[in-house]
Amino acid sequence: MSDYLPQELIVKIFTNLPVKSLLRFRTLSKAWCSLISSPDFFRKYSLGLVKTTQKVLIMNNFMGRKDIYTLHEEDRLPFSSSEEGYQGVTAVEFPRCEVQIAGSCNGILLLVDMTFGMCLWNFSIRRRLMIPRHPLGSKSSKMTVGFGFDPISNDYKIMLIDYGATLKAFVYTLKTGSWSSIAPPASTFYHLRCNSYLIDTTLYWFASESQKRPHSVIMTLDVSTHVFGTIPLPEPSWEIKQLGEFNGSVAVMCAKGNNPWIWVKKKESNNVSAWSVFHKLESPPFLVGPLLQPTYNGDLLIETFPDLNDMESRIYNTRTGMLSTPLVRFTPLGNIRMTTYVESLELLDSGTPCGEGIKWTK
Image (tube, rainbow, N blue to C red; front, side, top):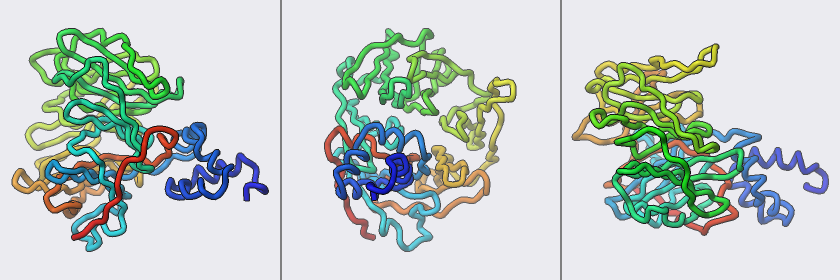
């Protein structure tokens, strides 16, 4: 087929195909293998020609022994109302347990373990890249990381911030495979929420400029310029729960008791951003967990739990007001964690194979 079609058309066709098909096509011809394996094609597939629909990645942790990952479309989550559960879903066991998903970008997960060892892992193609030990050497209770893609340098970066007695900041770049120091934030921070949130090329953290309030501002970091900044929180902010995204804008969930509000910072016609209340929940009959937003239909989803005695994960849709039946655990005694995810070919030309497929049994 490649003898009769121009290269540009082949690239356009390939960027519309799922990852599994592309991996098979690499074995059909040397020309296709070279094309699909090129970093330039990775970028076009991940960032340019077609926006891949986000899905939900579920991590099942089995009693601290192993982590099992499965990927689902929003309308095919493993709810208890379905007899199939995880039947027909590819499950992958990651060889290290009790890791935290500290970042996600273009199909690459930044995983951090209990000793603050880091690796990049592409669940789609089962490849892992171990990250060299960071300059601080060991884990600190006052360290946080972020992960994103810099379109200017065409490179992936891990940002590391130490907000101890002296503020320090470092960046790891995938191209160089090394860490280097960058200018730290100008403000003094007493606390940073461990998890960052990436929107476009900006990382966001909950932060505190005062010892009296655990979260008083949002700290930002531009992945391209390495410039830090701050954004005031909406008022009333009450107890800060989580950062998120809605239609390309930063979102904040805060709560008074069990009455959460979701704020969204939207750009107005004069290009000035302002906070507005997107959704209110008045005394919901469940505990509110993390925000999720697969772009299958643009709905904003919230992970919820019935109560402290019943931690079965359910999904609440802010548009429909519907609450799902419980999610089925892959393992009976496993704990579920979820994040949004897009499939990609990133890391196909680096790292090592990682991730063993396993079958689900009731």
